[in-house]
Structures are given as C-alpha cells and as structure tokens.
Image (cartoon, rainbow, N blue to C red; front, side, top):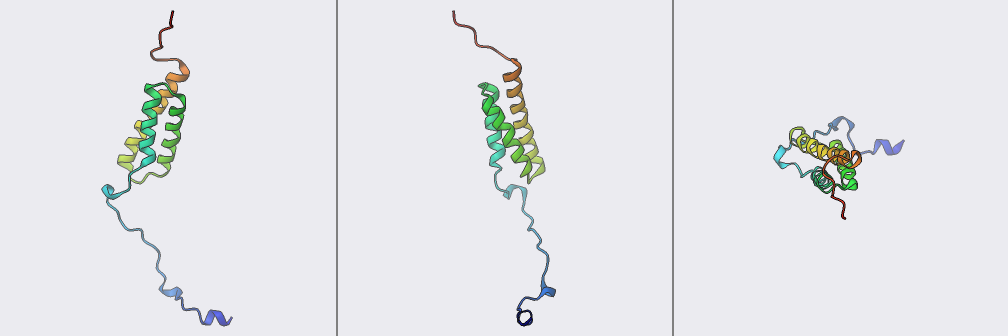
Length: 102
C-alpha cells in the first residue's frame, strides 16, 4: 500500500498515443512487394514454379503490411497476376513448349 502513495506517475495526465501523419512519398519502400514482382516475372518468363509460388507468398505479405492503398495495391495486383500467370502456364501446360531434340 505504501508504494502506491509514492508512485510518481499521474494517471490523470496520461494521453492516448496519436500516430504522426506521414506523407505517402516519405513512407519506406515496400520490399516484399518489389520482390513479389521480381519473382512473378521470373516465374512467368522462365517457367519456374518456385518463383511463382514465392511471388504469391510475398504478395500476401505485402498485402498484410500495406500502408499506401493506391501505390501498393497496383504493385501487389501486378505481382499477383504475374504469379498466377506463371502457375497457370506451369501447371496447365499453356504457353510455348521447347521443341524436342531429335
């Protein structure tokens, strides 16, 4: 009981935290979105299944950490399309096939 009377904190002076407003151009770079685009392009162009799956995973991570809705949503949607396109061409057999060597 004695420790409460000597407590220097003032509960009545406590204020809720307000996050400072940051301009969209000052936000840190979304590296997971950029990596998702790179993996999506590699997965679609070079037909790497692992790259396409990694693009989908990094898209989900970037979507979960999205800060700027306009710019990030464009980048995420582009990476998601590349990732899905790579998966479809890999698993469905669409797209150009290498010619068999005779």
